[in-house]
Image (tube, rainbow, N blue to C red; front, side, top):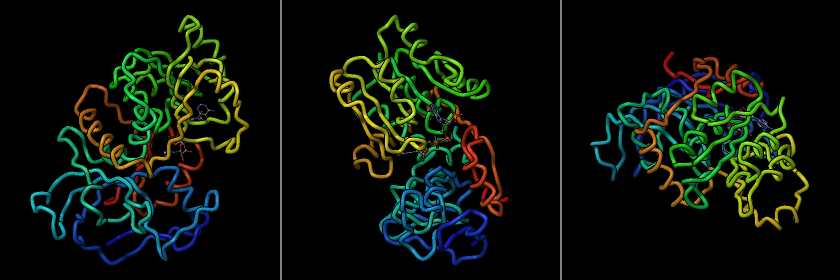
Amino acid sequence: MLATWYEKQGPAKRVLKVGEMETPTAGPGEVRIRVAYSGINPSDTKRRQGFRGQKINFKRIIPHSDGAGIIDQVGRGISKSRIGEKVWIWNGQWKRPFGTCAEYISLPSRQAVKIPDKTDLLHGACIAIPVITAHRALFSDGPIKGKTVLVTGGAGAVGNYAIQLAKWGGAEQVFATVSSPSKARKAKSAGADIVINYKKNDVAQRINKATKGNGVDHIVEVAFGSNQSTISKIIKDHATIACYASDKKPEPIIDFYGFMMKNTNLRWVFMYEIPDKAFRNAIRDIETWLDSDFVYHSVDKIFPLSQTADAHIYLQSGKANGNVIISVND
Ligand SMILES: NC(=O)c1ccc[n+]([C@@H]2O[C@H](COP(=O)([O-])OP(=O)(O)OC[C@H]3O[C@@H](n4cnc5c(N)ncnc54)[C@H](OP(=O)(O)O)[C@@H]3O)[C@@H](O)[C@H]2O)c1
């Protein structure tokens, strides 16, 4: 099969190779998927680069955890009725060497989830990391029905789905921050009620005005270190701040007493290792959400597999405005 791989960490053009590899077969409890699209996330490029000392514990890595395709083989213990099923893949390259950037992947059957008829394979490849992260960030501490939610980075892959899931989950009002008019359009398309350009406006002032000084119940936070002082001005008592990244300020000084005196719930989110029950809940809810009217997929760019390195460089440039996808069969 054709695949992209790397055997040492480093810059995309230097370490990513494209070539022929042996096609996997489905082992016991596994399915084999003929991959149509492979979704790239920042964690894939970070792992390839050795971000924060991450090691690759395998001789060869086929990158990318997310993807979508058709099941074409099942292993012992898996019903043959799964053959031909259209699926999205989660944790394809998490603690496993071979991810989705290849014509085939074999993995445990539960990590291949049926895609509803109305969702196409391209959009199936956008789902796993962004939507499960958004789901965890929103629902890990109970329902958000009737709550006021802020999603920072509302045009980002996770943020954009967080807006949609917040509306789907019955949030009363959803604010989103963005940095440009085109990103504002994406956040609006996802269903945000009020979109604020955080580069041009005082976010805390705008939200406090719109909420008559009440503030927000729940924040889905992409840049905790950079935004801490702003969000601390707009949280209600007992609010939850669900933080899933802090790239620019990875070691922020936390305003301990500020948060303590508001009984703030600081919730860390690391999608790959959420409890099993949380995965099951996310998968259940994603199925219902995909069938709802709250779905908007924002694919920014599609690269052929032969240009995986260019796709990684594009994602790392920070210019992507939506999901970056590899089309495996082009
Ligand atoms: N913890 C987890 O389980 C988990 C899961 C998925 C992703 N992540 C991490 O989360 C981050 C985002 O992932 P992604 O796939 O959503 O990336 P993405 O598509 O590049 O989106 C990130 C968004 O955040 C915005 N942003 C950056 N700094 C901001 C700030 N100070 N305030 C408001 N918005 C800001 C960016 O836009 P502007 O720069 O234009 O503002 C961009 O739209 C990455 O670091 C990724 O590794 C973590």
